[in-house]
Length: 108
Image (cartoon, rainbow, N blue to C red; front, side, top):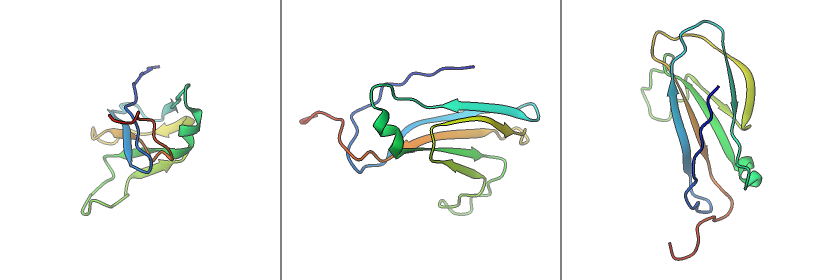
């Protein structure tokens, strides 16, 4: 189990934000992934975030808008997601969102 803590910058209303990107390898068949994203001081923001799991072994990426090999989750917690080795190409998890309000102080 790994825990990561991140300090969020000031967020701008209606603007896309990349909160994090994590690359990892799966070396054993039927690897279970458990993931929970939490913002203790702003639970409301979680409603406007999503997770993207990208299997880099399944993407041909002829076009930048292709979603082949991607799973998109509109929840910030899942358990027992079964992943398989993909020839050493790995996976990426992207945490992104568009907040409905500003968190940055005026004048910054």
